[in-house]
Length: 358
Image (cartoon, rainbow, N blue to C red; front, side, top):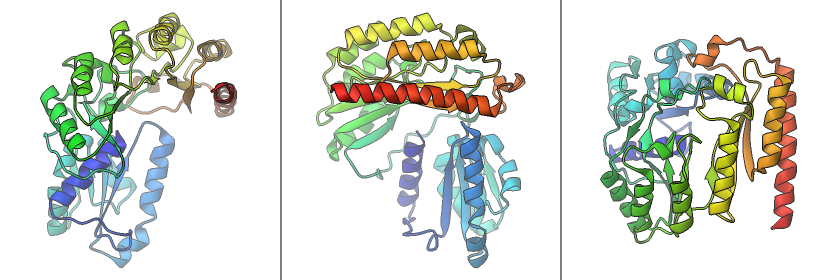
């Protein structure tokens, strides 16, 4: 999703008369696209911005911008943390960036544009795309789930779905330009307002497109009908990314995930039956507040029984204003690291065995 946002902003700027610079030293504008899902990424972001202090002194007219989730979360506080920032732009305001840059250049004053967090993005179709055969297509923005550890609803707003006609128009244009694969993006693609399976059926008929992927799926919204569509529609990729986050019902409830481990395992079983040869990947968080050794072992057992083809595994970190911040972060850092290593080792071994069997 961040890659697509960067593509979009690059395209809008190119369409407004800007040109891509060959290096930081030659740039008049440098924009950081940020993620605030994990604290580590956020800390690294501000460190990278600070490294431009000397360049800013050499080029006083250099404009440095911050866009994305961290921009929305920090707003004007981002400038307090990194005073060399000239503008802060939330995800809902990114189409305004060319105008923001011109205002900054004229007024020499910092601008904070974060007022459209719940607004649908204007239907603009800038031509710029990263070279290759795969193109990213956003079908929705924001999220309504409010998982207790997640900051997304606060920085990307409530869920908004694009009109099917606009998505079809974009995909047909991509096909006419030689793109063969598309990746449908949404914080929760399966809850697409106008019918996700119906959208897949329509995109499956677009001439020139050979493969259709999608992510991310939420377990409470996937269904037998989706798995049947993945089997029946020849262009739909058979891989499924289905985040489980934890194998403990107690922790899943604290996370506000809306399903149990048994429900998740039944979904996986149904998927494997209806989509033979498919691959399933997941996300897992270890060290969530109040996660005991018993809770962790429940996650280990789920991983071992499910036999994922791949997994993204993270250590929990509080992300204000997500609701889990009200819980004491009581799992020690060294224990979080141990649990992370245990799951990683299990997953690596499973992945090695699967590769040997291919």
